[in-house]
Image (cartoon, rainbow, N blue to C red; front, side, top):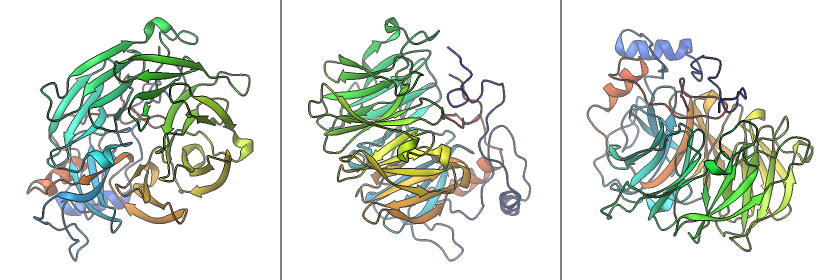
Length: 442
C-alpha cells in the first residue's frame, strides 16, 4: 500500500525528501577544512569544528581530543545524523559533544528502551533500523555485528530487558513481527528465531495488513505491545513462545479511525502511552497495565486538553509518573501527568523533534532537534530544558549506552568526506515519519 499521507510517505511525490538544508555558515566552515565543497547525493554539510574523535576531553580549538582510557563504564548518548550518515557522541556527565564518526548509515528509531542498561560493554551491540531491515553495530567499534532483512523499509525494534531477544515490527509491505537472537554469547546471535505474518488480518481501506507500527516491551519481559496503524488495534505479543496473546480494539475519539502508531511502557510496567495519528492534530492515550496481558485504556488526550500537535513518540520518566510526548507539529515536548491523565507543561524546542532517549542514569532526556542540528537536554528533576548541544546535520534517532567507541586515526577524514559528499558508496537511509531521510523507500 502506498498512500498520500505526507507524514507516512514523505517521498510519494518523487522528491528525495532530503532533510534540512545546506547553510552558508556550514558550507564555508567545511570548505575551509578541505579546500573545496561539492555536495552530492543526499549528504549534508556540517561544521568542521564539531569534533571528530570519540573518547576524550575537548581541545582548545573546540574539537574533541583523544583519550586512550577504557571505553567501558563510560556513559554515552549516540545521535544519528540523517543529513550525512554520521553518528555524534555526547557525554551525558558534562553534556558536551565528544565527537562525530562517519558510519555510512542512519537510524531514526534505534532500540533505546533497555539499551542504556544492557549496552555497558564495548562488545555489546546497538540495534538500529537501517535500510530495509535491522542492523547491529558494535558499541566499541561501530562495525556491523548483525544484519537482518525484513521485507519492509519501515521498521521499529526493541531489545527485551534481559537482553536475549530483539522484537521487530515491520510495517507495510511486510506486515510482520520478528524475534531476533540478541544474546552475544549465543550461537544463533543475529538470527531470526521466530516470526509472525500479520497479513491475514487485513487492514483498513486498501491496506494488505494491519500495519504493525512500533514496539515497546513490558519490564517483566513477557509481553510486547504493538500499535497497529491500519488495524486500529493494540496487539499484545507473548515473547516466548512468540505469538499473539491478545488484540484490543482501539476506538476513535472523533469521526475518523483511531490510527494508533507508537507506544511506550512505563519503567514500573503499570502504564502504557500510545500516540495516535488521528484527526488533524493527533491524540494520546494512557493505558492501564495492571494485567500486563490485558491493557485497558484510561484516558485520551487531545488538543483541547493542551496536547501539542502531531504526537509521534514518547518517553516516560524514571518515576513512571511523567510522560514526555514528542509533538513535532508544534515544535515542543508535551509533558503529561500519567496518574492524573492531564497535560502539565509544554517545553518549547524551537524546532522539530521526533524521538528522545534517556542517559544510562535516567536523569536526563536527550532530544535531537532535526531542524536545528542540535540536541536539547531535558532535566527530569527540574522539568525544564537545561542545555542544547550542537551535533551533525539533521539529527533524528538517538540511544545511549554505558560504554563508548574508541577514536580512530581516520575519524577526522571520514567525517569531512561524508559532509562534502565524497565518501565511497551510498549512505544507507532510514525511514523517518514526517521528514524522511533521502528518498527512503518502503
